[in-house]
Image (cartoon, rainbow, N blue to C red):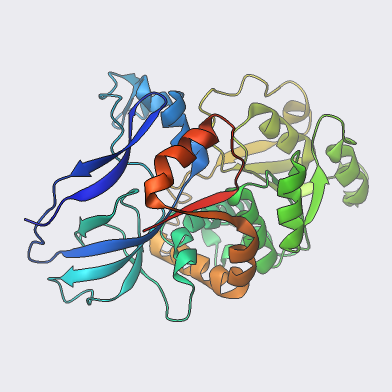
Length: 365
């Protein structure tokens, strides 16, 4: 057996700990990695810390596609995070050589024994800052999948390019968190005519602007951004607004804003997670009168009819293209803190209690 590993867990509501887990021997066909970096996905991870994640209170029946099954044991939550970068330390498979730097999704832990037939493994290219690899296996594909859903909304299964939904389009992105900013950069890279990022937080708008993106204040005291963009973005008489809106904030008011930004018969591509539901979405107003649509771009599936040609590996390849093009700016402006793994419990607690404001925190090992 190997020496013990350390794993960041939520032991109980409000309590984050580093726990020891037994080491594993590497089986034939497997490999062992040592973690270099692990990115914190604050939106999802804090719902487990706060006790607001729906899965803590009701199980998901995968056969019926419905919540309401008996929940699994809520705590401890032993697997947090899905943005890991590691170096293969020992390999017993010809598929991956020792010393290779890879992106994976096994949670905040010091090491892991992987199975190439079970685990997603994205080999990072030479010359790429390995820290940026936190986006390659899961977070970047989430955002690329948003563009793919926009393309499918326009062309159905005839999609040929990730840019099919945004090329030449006027694009609004609601939310300047990590998902929103990566999505906006992808839209720009794939030929959008205009990309505007909306967020109420000055610090996040400043990061977006440092990345070369246009922003609008969506706070309660700002001019109505829907009026601003619909005044600017004219298609024809009675036809104004964004061709596509990517909604990236887990708040009902943000989804309602996204609907208001759209031109008639447009679609919100929703990449957000709403742990508390969406009571503020008003379906009797713009949604009804403008014939709008909402598509959930959940990373668990690509649009119907595209799974064969647009798998997760292709979305990771699109992410690596973005990281090659804009990696220096992403590293400089999007990653706002790199802290030792040992400080993980304190950092997550501070984020949950709003004692600390960060865009992207990365744990280093």
